[in-house]
Image (tube, rainbow, N blue to C red; front, side, top):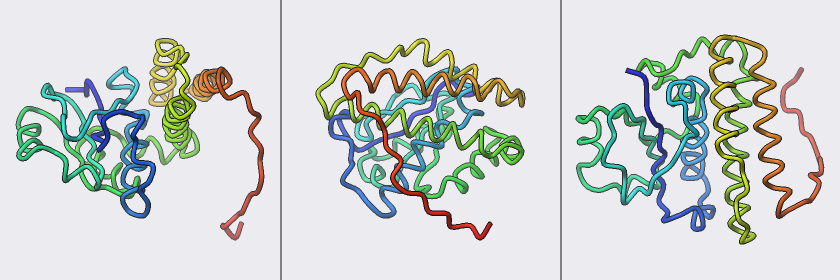
Length: 207
């Protein structure tokens, strides 16, 4: 059965208190969990924008749901919840701090096709970048006490179309992704109309 939902379980009550203070492995785990949820294979299945839930108050209806549990959230999950969730039809991924390892685990579970991203790694990485940008815009909105003006339904439609086209290896996926980034830019400009500045670039590859 295809997935119906993906959810990252976070140790916060709302995005207002998102754990931005974490660093090291804890921060890596949250970032990996959040961005992996934006894999095009998962989005194409669910037809939804990846979501999140409180770790101390996780969803009860979890059939055909992928639950991603970052390291810092593990201690806040109710006792026995993850076992019950798996019994009820959820796929649970815990403690992954490396995106590649997480995707390998999802591939072994049959939820994504790893070969699909080896052909066009730059496109798949763009989905991860979009997920990261989405999170940053959401956090920035709340930090500036702004009100979200994101055209969420339009964003969802474009996102799912991009993921579906990517799965079909159609070049139009890049165009749809670009439109998603444009919507995020419009959202940011509503309350923070500042031009981004390119400061420095360091190339670490010998090539």
